[in-house]
Image (cartoon, rainbow, N blue to C red; front, side, top):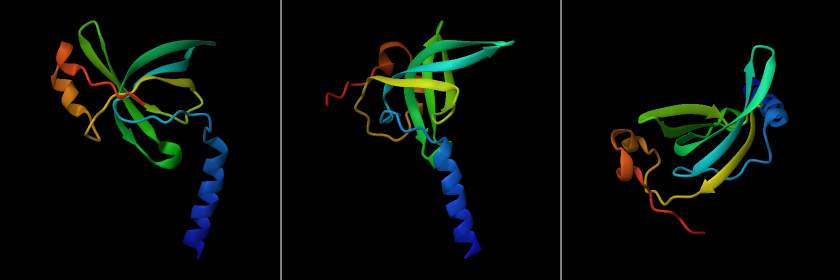
Length: 120
């Protein structure tokens, strides 16, 4: 009984910090993020965009891995989507994919990384 009670308490605490205004993010989406960056004692908003190559659903700890290519170098970052540092997430385009993880894009470059757009 105490284990079940602990789970209920965890869900109540997580509900306070969960964001409600998130769009439906799926694998293959091109997204634009607004991040709150702290430099010294100043805070600024930094925009970044990329392709979602994986998603880990774990309630409050849900993460997405975003990949983009900067100066011919692939950069991947993992974001907690319920983090207070993420101000806004906007889906730019959705792509049709048949896999849960798009790690094969790491080995490809240029036009080989294109994905077919999904029209809804």
